[in-house]
Image (cartoon, rainbow, N blue to C red; front, top):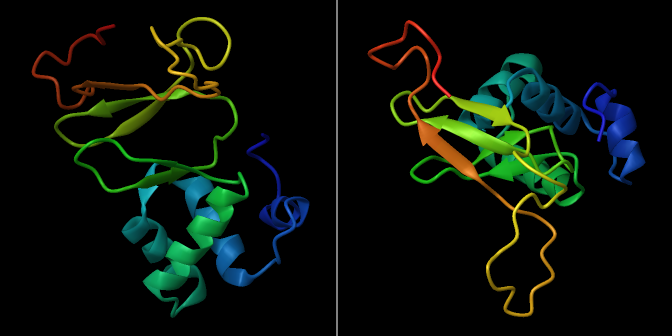
Length: 146
């Protein structure tokens, strides 16, 4: 999915009505990927004024269901949202500050990983979260480690 499209065109493209809260939420997530609901709501309120947190949740749910946003839930963290969808990428999460960064699939075609047993499932996505310390939080932050 393209991430540089106009939010109005994106909404129309998936059959959702174009509203100011929907446009503001899509813009907020695009400008601050991996934001949680509180951060998104703050950006939307700065832009539109009074908008309820429930309205932001409703927009996030509709846009996620329509494939415009992706919801990720790193363990111990609130749900976060991003506009990068449909490519089955993964995430790096800092154990100290909570910073989240995208990382492309390590090997092969989506879903990148195959389970040792399918148990009858047809796998179409794999979610991988790599945990560690970001460069700013590492005590030896002189060189990035891989």
